[in-house]
Length: 315
Image (tube, rainbow, N blue to C red; front, side):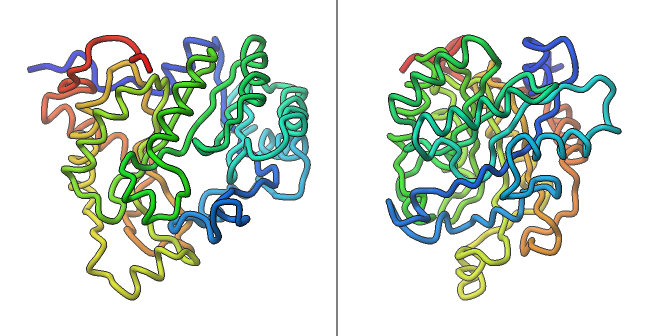
């Protein structure tokens, strides 16, 4: 069998909206999370150390506009005539008063070459007044709200101290899509207690959500996290697959995903000075090429085993 395509990629998704190259520039606007400040808990997610994915140009304490200018300079040699998506990424970027949040988003949009926003947040941090304001914003600019789902297993969410439930994730994604806003999500494969069977089961659940974009990441142990300490005291409770094992798991997952969902990433890469395990040493683009080669070997493609019918699902 020859696969008609392998998967719906994120760059193709962006080409639906922009006739030019766009680059996401990450921002740290000084937010926290409700499972850090005591509202729902302390300590944050057990796997989280934000230093592991903040790029060098992203400096907390600098203004949104200054961070965007630094990001533009960082990427200036990479692309000709590049435009920018301002990516509010660090911690929970809808956690605050709606008026104050909207001022930050508008500051980002006022920067030259910025053509849209990506806002990363949690499923339990999208109040109705902010969603209404974002609905209006999405009518005049590109907007993607990206929810950290991580898992749709409540036992897992409790174990990793997420502070929200799977039902919260379903509710947030559905309300956001119903508001006419593009919706993204990210999930982590290999969380403690979740083996291949559980991961694959959740792929069909994720596909039933009205998602436009999905990021898939492997579990990483990062220094300075609760999970890294848990691993040190009980390493047998964790399983870190080889690259080839993880590639086959991702393919098993992708086969069950609704074909229209654009896949942005399959792997994350923390700095070597912070990463404990797994230490694969692969750049994301190298991993993606190996993944595509393996999909060709297996003669498979995104949605091959999806049984939910065509188009976005309803809530």
